[in-house]
Length: 323
Image (cartoon, rainbow, N blue to C red):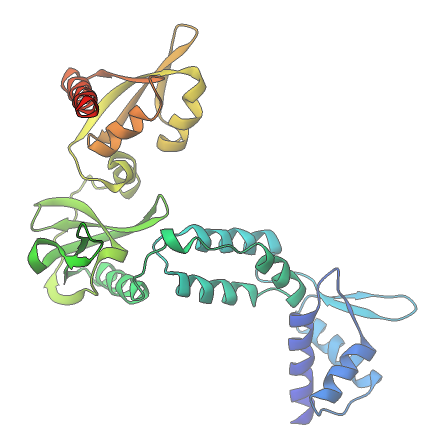
């Protein structure tokens, strides 16, 4: 029993304390075991490490005046962990407290030395984070409903002018048939058929009160429903009529078109300085605001009614500013 405990402790020590830049000697491992009240010797420790290597643990051995050991390949490499940590930091739907817990768990997958370098660069923007501490529960219920093909009901939050959180529509209980969970623009959404709207809409998961899993079967999604197409057309998850729109753009903003619609977006040159892009979008204020943000470098050329609606919005903004 003492032998089994020793080999497990050695493995934990190597995983926690060592990496390529911080190998451990047998003497250091023996010192650790002694502090843990586990008697041992050099020969036994070396034999234990060899057995771990034989069992498939990637322990690298530096031979020289003294043998040194460190864990080689880990479940996640440093750049992979950094990407995951950055994703948690930027996700607005994860509360500050949950973000700290998740990041601590991710750091535990690295050595203490690597984890220290991660923590030096962790700066959470608490102001942009959700305060919903029950997001995990909500997301789990939605995943269960999607897998089981069942409906859920929930109440939806909004805010008053005093920033007080209240239920939307006086506590109306939405009934939806959820189809997919979507991470878009640092927020988390569920795409679902809504009985209230009589169509597929997107709800912010962090603005849902904990939903109830219902026994009723979910309405089947339309035969042509595709999550990727839906994400591309429902512009930043704001509702609106989905239309085919033609944009005239300056060449310098091609990167913005690709960032938003992907490399498969349909484009063609228009002279030397412009190109056109045919996109499928929800023609909402969010879309118009995005076009406006390019300060004239992007224009809506078709269809005419969409271009006219955008022009009317600009005129309204100008009138309001004069007032």
